[in-house]
Amino acid sequence: MKDIAFVLYPGFTILDMVGPLQVLSALAAFDPQYRTVVLGEDGGPVGTDTPLGVTASHTFDEVPEPYAVFVPGGGVPTIAALGDEKLLDRIRAMADHAEIVGSVCTGSLILGAAGLLDGRRATTHWMCRHLLPKFGATPVAERWVRDGKVVTAAGVAAGIDMALFMVQELAGEDVARQVQLLIEYDPQPPLGGIDWADVDIAARRPLVDGWLQAGLADHPELLADLAG
Amino acid sequence: MKDIAFVLYPGFTILDMVGPLQVLSALAAFDPQYRTVVLGEDGGPVGTDTPLGVTASHTFDEVPEPYAVFVPGGGVPTIAALGDEKLLDRIRAMADHAEIVGSVCTGSLILGAAGLLDGRRATTHWMCRHLLPKFGATPVAERWVRDGKVVTAAGVAAGIDMALFMVQELAGEDVARQVQLLIEYDPQPPLGGIDWADVDIAARRPLVDGWLQAGLADHPELLADLAG
Image (tube, rainbow over all chains, first blue to last red; front, side):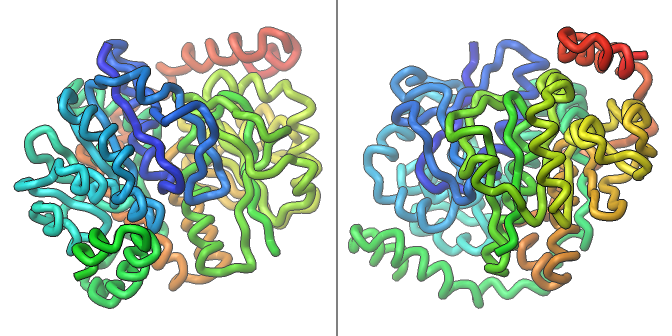
């Protein structure tokens, strides 16, 4: 059994996890050698960035060596997680054994804080790409980036695209098309795609700096490093 | 305060809810007259179609008259919900007062079973469109369909597109673009969109019939009506 694990921590962005979880759970339905699991410190409810609470299916101790591990991102709570050594230890331990280490959105910053992006190409939410070099990574403005066993997705909804790519890699194009059909992923954004030429990324820097200040108030050294 | 409510029931498809929940929670962040809530019978964990469990933010009794109510879909558990009179009563009561009554995927069948689609154009997951006329609805093969106060989305991932359309309706194009940018919804399916000319919808009929048999074993009259 190859376990595909998703990591819970308080306040994460729910769609970062649920997009890939839905896609990879469909893979598991088509190919029973895979099983998706959601891991937390215990079985208690964990808050998200929405009013929905969530609960893990297993504790970290119950699934210490998953085949793949995915880390969701978020705003201030994800920045705070960069200073959570217990969580980083959990992720490092799983990443040691895993064949695939993945993230969605600012989840890549957590991979970075765990030392897993050093020397790798990676991506993250468009507002935070400037932070990737702080962890030794080369930021790439792509929908998803694979470098060795590490695959990082851009912001939030990009996790769906990244997960379909993983299904294609793991089980082939036919299964990937079946999964896409099952979840009817035939996107029609009402206003079309994002026009990046119209997006002033630098203008969002103060917002991200505010997240850093709020999330790392108790970790002045890390804050100075990232905000500097 | 205008409450945008999402309805929990056991075994629903998690992305059906989380797509619109993420989008409409971002609307609430931009426009504080809106608040998203997740409603259940009690505060206990509810299972989904994945290993992730979820918990409501409020009970149905705590938010009896939301401004908008959205019902997610699923497979066999959603079919079973068609015979859950207590749940249908809850949804009917909320729909009476709501300005917007919505669904994602086979959630529209639940709206239908609650008597809310009679005489309306509606959509659902592509595999289940033939069931809509059983509830007096006219099936439409579109990404989302608005008819009066009822808005229905196609399968699973279509809820994201439908919710962005709702943001545009409620708060205008600028806010809809900001929300889209925040969740980086700039879809790039690795294998492109779905080629519907290649999809044999009739071939899936036995699968759907199996769902009906499994979900409505205790409701032979409803089963006979829907499977006939």
